[in-house]
Length: 254
Image (cartoon, rainbow, N blue to C red):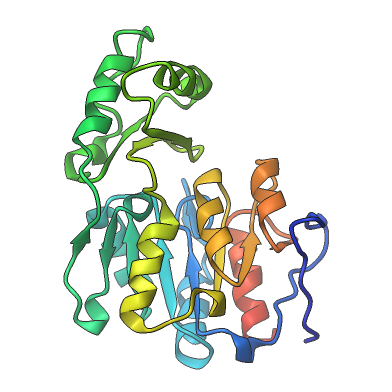
């Protein structure tokens, strides 16, 4: 497999099979979860076996998700790999394999207050947000993705203007400034002594861009968001969870 890299000034080309640079350069791969490893129909049939093979024979496999830690943990357990978990878009870090305790990197109370205020401005918006908010510690998520631009505009002109509003396609995340996947990943990698530039990341949505910017090689499995495509070094030929299967097979030389 010949090394190949697309840089930011050259957007990935749809229809090109993903080509991963020299595997000897990489110490870990980090996958987003929703829209990347699974969708509403669940995992791809080949995911678990391929992920375990990559983890055992090539490099550790970690997860970085917008989901809460209690949501991501069983997914990691089902995949059965040796990496760490970054949850809540970088707000929660847990590396139980290496014996590190759970780390909470932010306080989500202001984000929740902002969501309650938004509900007074947008008809039909439920400030309780998505059900997993009951376990959420560092941010707050709303299900009204169709109102994302309105939410972003309202927050920008409010007392919560310092907060960040990001849509993943599954939910709208409201969080303190600087809280993103790159923050959680930086801490998790530091705990393991891993250089982020020796890490591959795979994702599909705008909340994956900070992760893409942090690592040495990034792969998008969706072309739905132009800004994600522009930030990625490569894009898979297949989309969504099938794109992740394509990447895993490439790492195994298949």
